[in-house]
Amino acid sequence: MRRFLTTHRRGSSANAHRRACYKATVRIATWNVNSIRAREARARAWLDRVRPDVLCLQELKVEESGLPRAMFEDLGYQLVALGQKSYNGVAIASRTELTDVVRGFGDGGDDDQARFIVATTGGVRVACLYVPNGQEVGNAKYAYKLEWLARLRRWLDDHARRDVPLALCADWNVALTDLDVHDPAAWQGKNLFSAPERAAMHELAAWGLTDCYRARYPDGRDYSWWDHMAMSFFKDRGLRIDMILASAPLAARLTDCTIDREERKGRDASDHAPVVATFTAG
Image 1 (tube, rainbow, N blue to C red):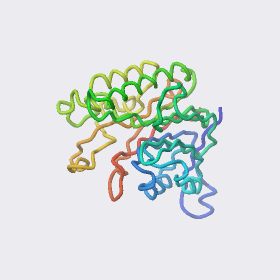
Image 2: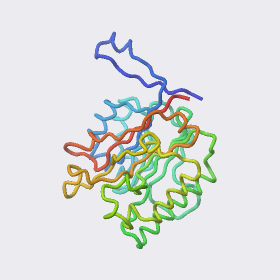
Image 3: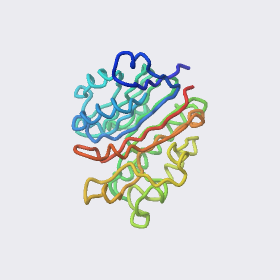
Image 4: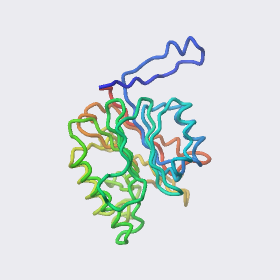
């Protein structure tokens, strides 16, 4: 298994760069950017500052031909994507080679929405997902969301291996527990926090997946999404719907998982914050 090496620069001089400290860790991040073109400058600054080994991006809202590939390449990242005009879109950026790239579930389903891409990098199988929102409990989009999650579980059964390091990085559009919702009573039974959605997520977890943030912070009340309306971020009226789920071999190497709340602040911010999980290298 190829090892990731994360580089941390100390100072700006050439000598300092040559004395860069290499740490045998892997940092995998997920971020719904809510339009990569609108967020290109912020994405560049964040990548340059945080330097994750892998970044999964959701809601690109652009076809692959319109992606800012040069920006990723300038920062040392290889990029694979499944784009779509104006809606959806997912991508994986990695500082090491991306191989065995698969776009879509490959189950023959009639689905033209760009929501799923998977690749192997540094010995880890990484899947980037943008789960359908659902809009409202009981409507056709909500039914599509539940079926999409069921398709994901079937994909795990048919194409994934429990003995291989696997990370599912996503805007799941589901909050799992009361700790993940600013007002559980108000959200109870509503889209993003309904019982069928949470049951579908538990079915996924039963395959053998660990929620990296909750594994490290069992009682944490951090959120990853805040509506742009009604001053939600400043009132901390958020939900934790962006998560990295890891298979057992990868979860065993987990050392931390954080939500970069600072990136939600300021001009041109996405309504989502990046989530970063750190693992020891395999």
